[in-house]
Amino acid sequence: MSPVEQIKAKLSIVDVLGSYLTLEKAGANFKARCPFHNEKTPSFFISPARNSYYCFGCGAKGDIFSFVQQFEGLDFVGALRVLAKRAGVELERENPKVRTEREKLYLMMEHATIFFQTQLSTKDDAKQYILKRGLTAESAKSWRLGYAPLEWKALSMYFKAKGFSPADLEKVGLVKKSDKGSGDYYDRFRGRIMFPLFDSSGRVIAFSGRQFESDGTEAKYLNSPETVLFEKSKVLYGYDRAKLEMRRMGYALLVEGQMDLLMSHQVGLTNAVASSGTALTLDQLELIKRLAPRVVIAYDADDAGAHAATRGWQLALQVGLDVRIATLPKGKDPADLAVENPEALKETITKARHLINVELDRIVLQYPDARERGLAIQNELLSHVAVLESAIEQGHFIGSIAHAAGIKEEVLWEEVRKRAKNSLLQQDSAPGTRPQRPGSRRDALMRPLWGLYFWLENKDKEALKQLDIYQKMCNIVGNEEVTKSHEIVSQSKDELIFEAEVSFQNSTTIATTVAELFRSLEEEWLRERFGQAMKELADAEKRKDADKVLALLNECQNLSEKIRAITHQTPHL
Ligand SMILES: [Zn+2]
Image (cartoon, rainbow, N blue to C red; front, side, top):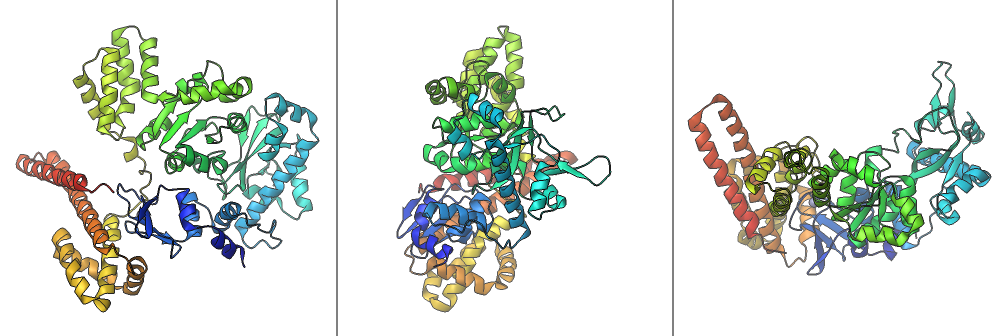
């Protein structure tokens, strides 16, 4: 058996996907909210019998390999590594024939890691330093810490002996070209303790080097530049080991630096990930959000204060994460506390409070003067409230702020509404929603309906008549749109029939699924029209066309009521 076959024989699709998603039983199948598009009701189905999954909302489909690839953003080999580890299947350690350029780059990172590890094993003062910081020799080995000697070409010579060129090394950011125009290269990392950064399958993709002996630069930490393997904004340090724990515990522990991360894991906080000193990005937050609804942030108290107002933490609130702050004693970072008193660290994490409450307390304490306090709330706090998804949550916090600061709730609401218009997510693209051309979500919803239509057309005319798919589509989006759509889907008729057959063969829930698809389609269509009406409204306001403005306001209100009615009548699944 090939490794792929062995893995498939050992792992059930339900166990693998169930370690990433919350599954519900649905007859012989399971369903979940799709991780690949934004949805409130589950349309992502898993069939244990067919060993496959299929999403009616966005058309995602495949097996455990394609799922892990897409979910973790890995290539096939990466997914293979993740699943082989789960299944306990041994992969051949090193493939002597590197097939692709990408594999060559991974191989170079592996060689470099081994080189740095070997260097560390003979560098006693660096080893002592690591132990003094509290890290055990086992942890250092497990996280593959290393040492880059204070020489210009130590690493380059090592690679030269293995037949790699400086140009190869430059591709993975391990050397730099000399400024002098000589075309010469020198090692990027010199005199540094090396922390390898891993992708979610555990392959080394970059390094962070902490200064140990002066290399003539000021930087305490030096990171690899962006390379083919390393997109800084998409990597969380420790994610490869923390991901399943994050999901199991329902939250991620977010720390700032490498040592914080290593020490957290060492004392058993194995759901910790680190942002490595950079501002949090949407991609990183999405990595967390897909696995856990909550993030507990444990930064040094001073750093936490400085970060609280930044975009990153606000983005975390805005993507819908429950953001809690673990308040550490002043001047201590999680690494210090993990060394001195691991139980105290764990306790501050258990007692973590919501970001907005923590910030409110800080402002009240910092500004005894009522006017200054009001200004601070306006400038530093209300933008956090404005980005919350749920109006109920907003109301809760506005209540607390009004009470603590002695400001009227109405005034706070008005400020919050003003801010909601300048939402950060309108500048970025929302997480979970891949960039889509207009109407493509509607297309995605109509696809399975067309599939069913074409499939039943040949197979079961009576069932087709009962489901009345064509007419119902016309009722929702109109004859003209249905005709247009029919023209487009007719080109991939065979594929659609196949999809329908895979999804609906022997299914006892066709009627419910179809009803749900129609409901989503109607909602989507109303949202499209709502968006269009809002655009026209803005234009009419610019032209100062009062009659048109009034008519459009009415239409918008109408549509939004209909949307609300539909979203509320959704049966709770
Ligand atoms: Zn989907």
